[in-house]
Image (cartoon, rainbow, N blue to C red; front, side, top):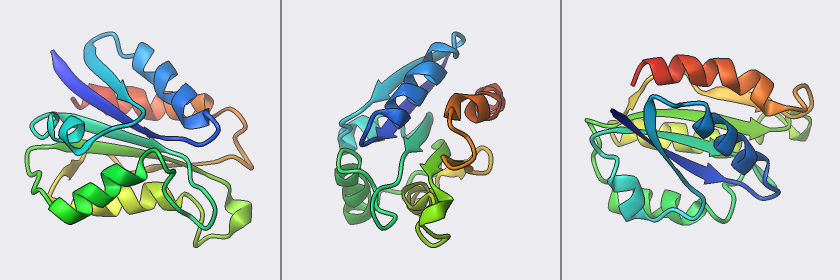
Length: 148
């Protein structure tokens, strides 16, 4: 059975709710959701697949609960050539294009630098257009899971 670690960056719970809904829809996958992940949690999936689901805060920053993982990955810079990944980025384009989905864009770039393999292009969800992110994310996620 394929393994999937879902790592969440959330401030008000939207990304967390989305992650829980998606995880429960993946019956054929051994899925674990991490809200306060450590580097060890993440590296446990170095030969499997991870999914980053993150909202974006302030000026395009990573939420506080996910920031320590991002910093640890930058500092330790573990090469992850066997890891597959996907990113669902949540944001609001009314804050400006340079800030829109900034957390997801940063994780997407870092995981690529670490040599992980993107299983499909990042999904950017605009809260100004899609009030319910699950409506947009479910099809993307279903296609993502097929690739595991």
